Image (cartoon, rainbow, N blue to C red; front, side):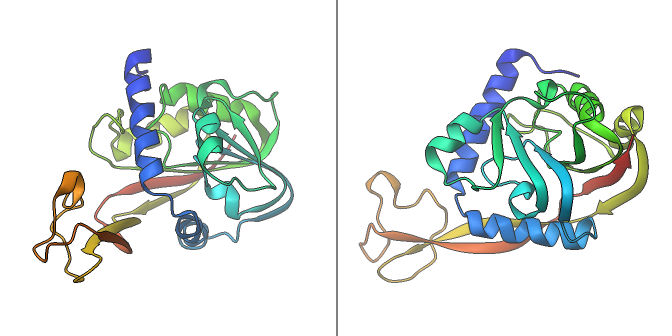
Length: 235
């Protein structure tokens, strides 16, 4: 079901806040390389292809693939360009997945990774991907089983995901996981080194028990017990 314009606006506002909070570009690239290798079982090399990444954010899987032409599409791209150093070999376009600004049969490869539960109209996004994908092209897709929230306004089940994909594509291979790698951080007192109970500590003048109001973030790679449903598809 498509979101109202107001609900989608709220989801996009949430996305901006989340993305600006986790600005570890090199770490995201590392996760994307692992995702290509471990989830899709490919090396990410498409030397003669046009590759499009739908909902790529400021980094996206497009940042770690090799291709003749690399395109990243995101409705928040104009905002990301103000803050992040974008990849010089990627053509970034501010556009929604529901309105991809390319002609039919444009792309050899499309990635739609952890995107479908963030968009305004999932069915329309998949329809647009099918439209721009060449007859011999491939879609590499996945979506996370996130709880319904402002930032994840669509709730999917395994059955609904594959049913929606089958409406627009032939599924060559189903790929599923029961956990996903994530990047997060922990907060420590910069003076005494104690781990603080929550990131909110030391905000608004709060101090550590040692009296310090200085803090430092420590990056952590963790595993979330979140299901991920994916597929490799063709027209």
